[in-house]
Image (cartoon, rainbow, N blue to C red; front, side, top):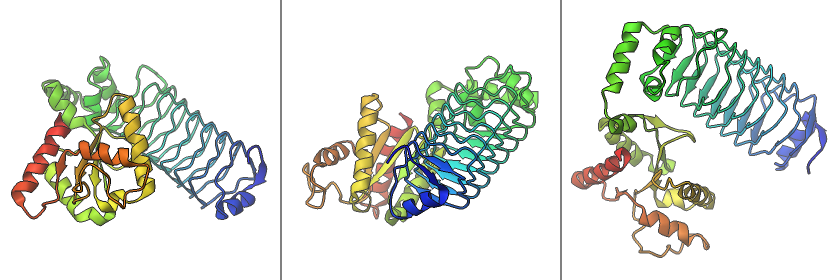
Length: 357
């Protein structure tokens, strides 16, 4: 039901009964401290001044929500969508956000000191006068953000394209900037100035820029490529062995959330038998194919899941035979024969070649 006006207590009661759709709902006196919300849809809702201190939100939709003046201190958000949300003057100190989307959000005057944002979209967001002192931003999309008057003193910018400079009122002192962020920003003529304002010694900045510019585009691209391993916990030992081998051969930029350049899809009976996983993979592969990015997902076989031939096995859900055939036809390498070191090394070599391509 849409357009309701309910209390926070009523909201939590309905969630406890399995209800998930609360689009355009006004939540009065929204005391949601310590709440655990998973998969609920609050698109366009009004939660002005809501208290979500210490709350956990997993795969929730809060697009276009009015969250002005809300409190998120110590909250955890995983895979949640806050695109276009109004978070003006929100208190988000020490919030942890992983794999979510805050693109086009209004964060004017928001308090984000000590926040931890990893693999989060912030493209086009308004961060004017926001306080990001001591915040950790890793693999975050900062394109088109407005940081006029923002405070970034003591922040860490890891594997990001550096935000714009030239705003005199923006405080950039003593920022930690890793080499990946410098590499992603090499095209910018103001890079030396940016690093100087951040507190990096000029001689160190010059040396790092020169070293990165001396690399070929292919080698630099391979080093920056963010790689994610999708697997079932039951295959953890073999997957860790594969990851260790890849790391030894220069594949080191591992990410665990939704923002990646390459996804190694570890195919096994344990991974692919779940209908919800198949639906997710089907949608993702189709989306990448439409975008002309079919090489993003790299399936590898961990067992005999594709050994039965072109047609899907009997345990494969009806109606998803196309997904089975697509995955089988795109398998990069097979690690089924893990007891043979030579075959393992050969399979890993094929995977490394595709990751560097």
